[in-house]
Length: 89
Image 1 (cartoon, helix red, strand yellow):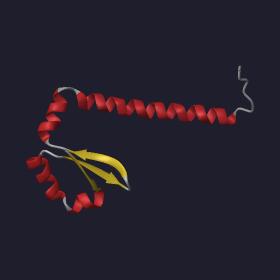
Image 2 (cartoon, one colour):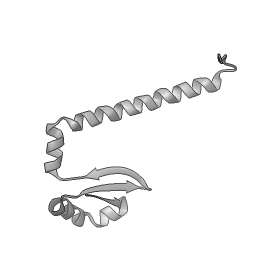
Image 3 (spheres, one colour):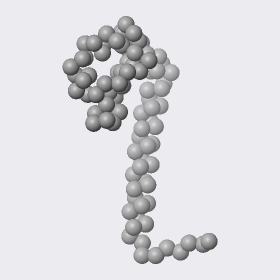
Image 4 (tube, one colour):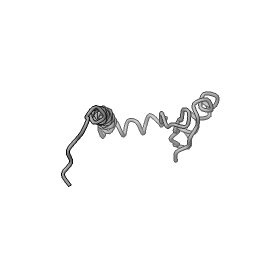
């Protein structure tokens, strides 16, 4: 089960959130200005992910996403600077 809290709400209900994680086995999704920014879950669940290597894999994918975003931005910037471009139809 996953429950969503805004950052300000999570701050004021932190103790309750920890209890939900411990006793109800919930995952807590934290948002900031409507954007998903963090997830809080139990140490047992973290250890399962860590044992499977999923934590490291997720980090690698995050780096890949950033790299692809940068490459895409560079391509669009280069296209803006081109005066004309031949296209075969």
